[in-house]
Image: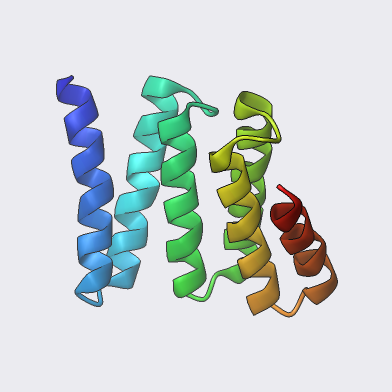
Length: 120
């Protein structure tokens, strides 16, 4: 339990840093949190995938769009593998990736993901 609350605090601290305009520090904190989550819970644990999703967001905010997109794809693959195609969290991962792709001008792929999410 102690480990879990410390992990949650690391993730929360990353977003506090982001809110204070300390984006690179926030990204570093989230990367550290992700490493610990992977070590303690595994790569496909729901909590690990959530932190990975958060890191994708921070990377995108920091201008690292390609890295963010790769991470969002990993989240989607992980959610599909562990939760299946019809789970709410998988659907959220589809939507998040679609948004990222749209922001980066990959409109055809974004559209197909939005349609998939809509059909859910």
